[in-house]
Amino acid sequence: MAEFNRRMALFLDIDGTLIDLAPKPDLVVVPDFLPPLLHDLATELGGALALVSGRALTEIDRLIPGLDSVAGSHGGEWRLQGVTKAAIAAIPELDALAAGAETLPGILVERKPMGVAMHYRDNPQLAGQVRALARRIVESADQALRLIDGKSVVEVVPAGTDKGGAITRFMDAPAFAGRFPIYVGDDVTDECGFRAVNRLDGLSIRVGGTKGSAATRGLSSPRAVRRWLKTLHQQAIGGNHVQS
Image 1 (cartoon, helix red, strand yellow):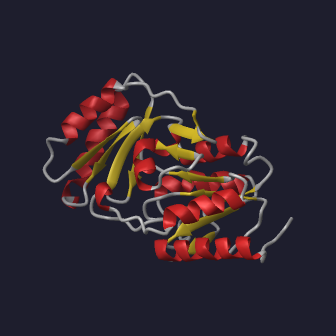
Image 2 (cartoon, rainbow, N blue to C red):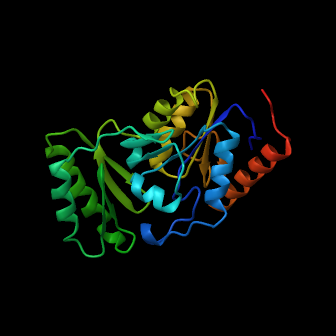
Image 3 (cartoon, helix red, strand yellow):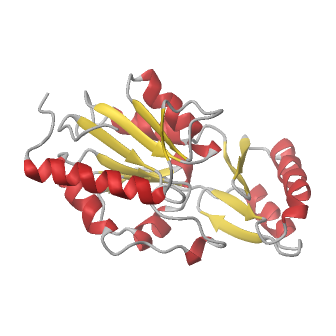
């Protein structure tokens, strides 16, 4: 796995990557050491560390507060070096989608500023019905939308918003420009992020293995990711890192 390099730019998904998945999004547990570890790494990298998540910015800040660079809602909203850059527009079709999904038993509907996520972990036999509802909304909406099929969740977001676009946007910013990008994710929603860093000759790492993925490297679990981040930090503060 990559060693610490002061010229790297580090992009990290959250759920299933930094922290273990939970039956419901609000039940995840963030290890106490993780937020300060990420802050320390961001400092060592001159600010070139960003979280890239499907969660809304407000939710990301609740879990891991205070980071300057964060992309939420699959890149639909973001904060770059402390400044929020996305305008959030109302999409009426998403209200209809949420209302329809809420009538389905056992489906957890998560409203986000730039989308709707429908979690079917508690009732997996309704997965097809949830997808069909999402497809109907996507096909009938006045605004271009896209469907994201993740781990026990179907999400609908505005077309053109994805994690790859978020990473590319960050790489154009002064704190990230010219650096070696690394992206770590775990899900099909992270594939566009893997492809983005591959195009930039960076390193793409998928949690759970690389089979069927654009990622070029793999880590076994969020625990393994956290161990690797601890190692990077130790290399950074101990001087055991690549300078170029």
